[in-house]
Image 1 (cartoon, rainbow, N blue to C red):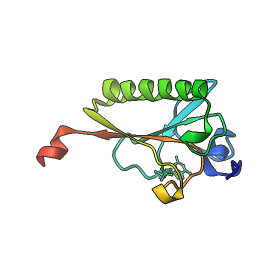
Image 2 (image 1 turned 90 degrees about the vertical axis):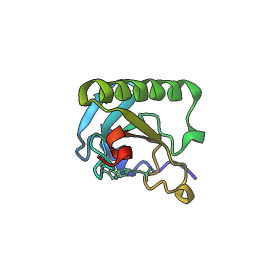
Image 3 (image 1 turned 180 degrees about the vertical axis):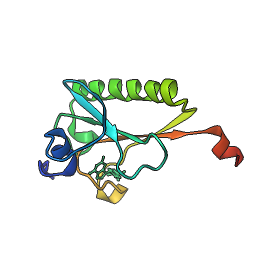
Image 4 (image 1 turned 120 degrees about the horizontal axis):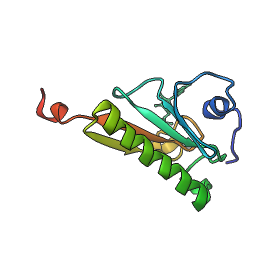
Length: 116
Ligand code: 5GP
């Protein structure tokens, strides 16, 4: 399917709707998820118009993963996050609701596992 330039993340990239941005460079944007699964739940997206992981060239994906690393590092150093789940859904059948490639960074804490 072709890229829908009216999807919500395309609008965020064009600043047509607001978002809480935490990092931006020439190739990527990171911003807070509007319905966080945990405090600090961040989304990283390429500026390249890709719907899924299959639609992005290797060099653009490399820039995107570098930003994923930067944000993960910042979550650990600034918020004291102990672990980060990296989640990425491809296609509606997999649960993808926004048709612009995105990586979820979901902070986790050991206390959650031990029930404290
Ligand atoms: P998906 O299910 O496609 O992997 O995840 C899409 C994510 O985008 C969801 O976690 C959802 O909360 C988030 N989201 C949807 N609309 C908006 C929005 O307008 N702003 C922000 N910041 N996040 C959004």
